Length: 144
Image (cartoon, rainbow, N blue to C red; front, side, top):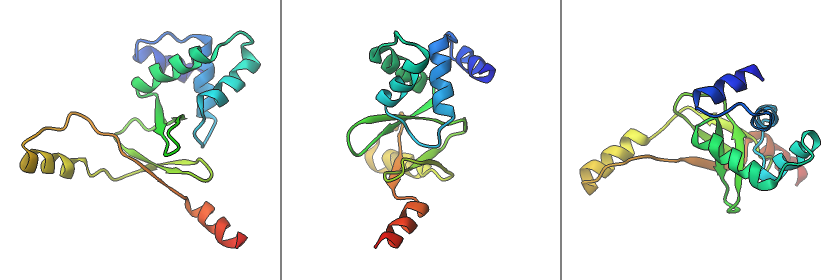
């Protein structure tokens, strides 16, 4: 919890009990969670917590880079705690919901393409790769 408090402080966010609890819940998972799943778990600790409070806190922490926002193909938002502060992207398994770091980024090539061929400039980028992880692929082969 102390590491979470320090992290929040660096982002000029108060280390409130609810924010700390959200980070605690997300940091214990290897899968992404929906705001509703986070809210359900928080209600065990805080009986009077509303879903809008959970959404607001998740968005504040996602803007600060503490948590990663999964923009899922099902058009819903999910959240994942990622302690890797270096620039990187994620592979998201749509079957088991596991999230893994990717070590490559093609941003420099894209930036060059935009600059040289479109006479433009890139101000930011988001890249998420969706698919099935090796374990889910193996399990689906066994089921057949």
